[in-house]
Length: 296
Image (tube, rainbow, N blue to C red; front, side, top):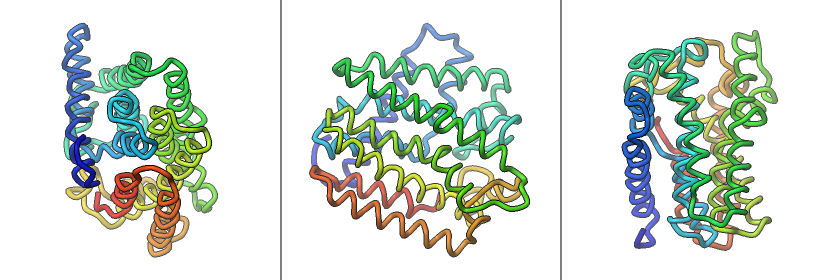
């Protein structure tokens, strides 16, 4: 994108990401039409696009361009969307509203929602495998995303979350572990994949991933705060659902005021580390603020 204003860059990236995602689905006439429609329903429902935007910003911070970041940005949003589709199923969180519209299983049925999630998951890795990048970078990107989405990341965190549901009490350490895996792993991977796409030095890649982990934890704390304080209309999903289900949340572990303080503290840590990076970091810093200073 032309220009250097962070707000304009992010707005331009968001428009491009929406366009690229639409092309990735609409152009696949080889897919059975009911499945293609069920895949497009959650993928094109909007949302913050935080994870692909972080890929774009991290790539820029490491001197890369949007062409290098395109495939990993799309892949990470496909993985995130698949996780939402499955998370909303009756067997999991049993939610009927996501991004302000009926969830995929409500519209297309549970079986088709499972298949849509599966198809988005595999399309993410197909997208990475076909990226116009050096083979060694593609290998690193595939490995990073697989680890973040799998049993040692998002899926493992979801398993721990289900195990803790309804517990009489939950410790801060338990909540931190659950959310570092369930939410933080993919946000950290988004940072890392942007740096990997740019061909950054290993030390820089590791530092950007670590910054992403801090932002991911702060993001989830804010998510728990909003579950208690925002309305369903503001969130685009059912407010108070986590508390009602007895989920392991930061507000349950440390209280609302302390959770807010922790989120602000973590944001400050992340911003200080972003400032120390060598590249064009203004978009990355702005996205870090947007991840925490939000009402949905």
